Image (cartoon, rainbow, N blue to C red; front, side, top):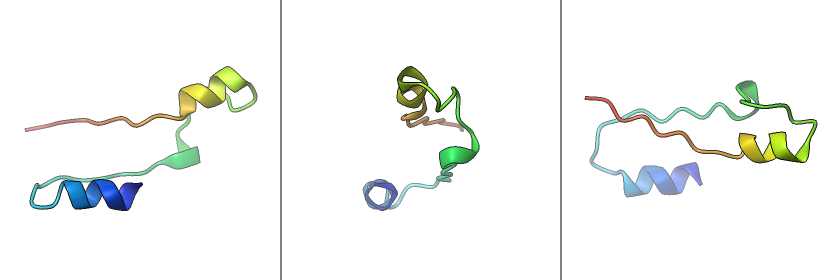
Length: 46
């Protein structure tokens, strides 16, 4: 998935950071928490 995003953004300047399991926003012990952790956060600066 990350490689596909990088191809679509070819020619643009930016930084892609993948945190995976290192920065969950909720517990992974419940179905609701796991659903909250399946996310993509995009921050646009400049």
